[in-house]
Image (cartoon, rainbow, N blue to C red):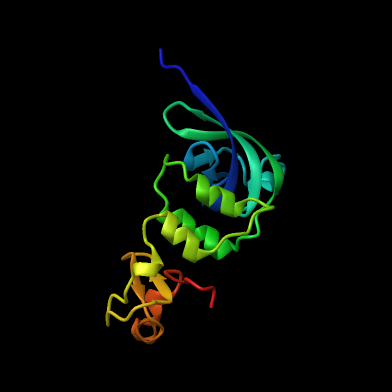
Length: 175
């Protein structure tokens, strides 16, 4: 007989996606476990008690169970983060699952200096200070291309096809 594991952690909801007719798939940055993707059964029902606690940007105390997959069992909203929904989306794309990132966590919770891509990329190993444009090798790039994990200067990012830039390029300086 397999045993279920239960986990509890404070978490920032990074993203939510529909799954089936009534379920949802959520991506969290948890304080204790790092990025966690989990299913929440019936979270899209109009009578769902979980839905309001699992909106992107919400900071909540979340209880998960793991049997064959990770599932959200309970959540209680404790606040919201000041980071934008776009920043949370990109963060969800860049993080690896189950790798705690205490410095990123501190950037997202209220009462701290706040979230900045310049600092976040440095924490994740892509330090903008020593980076150069992937196209022209100019120093001090202003943009980060998420799918290829490359830096670009302002002139070269304009040369990228617009369909590539949509939802894939982030400004390091919040331009």
